[in-house]
Picture 1: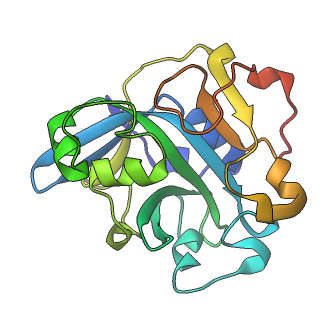
Picture 2: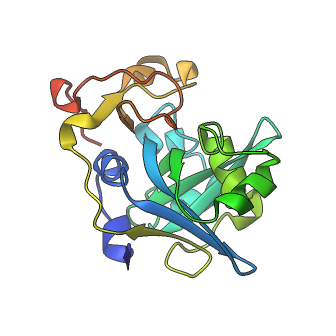
Amino acid sequence: MEKLGQDFYSGKNVVLLAKQLIGKVLVTDFNGFRTSGRIVETEAYNGVIDKASHAYGGRNTNRTKVMYMPGGTAYVYLCYGIHHLFNVVTNQENIPHAVLVRALEPLDGIEKMLERTGKPKLDNSLTRGPGNVSKALGIAASHSSLSLLGDHIYIMDDGFTIEPSTVIASPRIGVDYAAEDAALLYRFYVAGNKYVSGKNKPLNVSQYPIRNP
């Protein structure tokens, strides 16, 4: 397994990176407990020009300033005061691109994930949806701004490949406020995977145009 490095995270096309993260392994290592899962669903957020992005229009607040850090930084925010949502900051410093990790297929440390989530046994709700991803892996808003090049939260490439025809592009979930940008095909997922949240239809990504950032 190889840890993703700065070159990967510095890529300029956040939509492409969101697609490339499918199949990679998100790992946390806190207090000697390692948990991980294969990424099966992501969403791209294209910075200042994307009406669905927290940084739309150049918005830069105490919460979103992390998005302006160099690629390879964790952006974790609290949603509805309940869910901690984990995002991967990409591109160069001062370009606030980010990829939300929406779902994982559990790999390592499942017993610890069950303990963190209070679940008696493994089912597809364990890491289905971004709030569950963070809860199962022990990720909290306090981890925002942590480097993904370090030893606590990082992403690995284990050589696993996914058939390209099974990687689907669709509109993002829960961004109706973003007007025409709500229709952008910036969500990627593995068709038929039981951990994918939202609609899970077997449509080939190559059938759809993707607006370049």
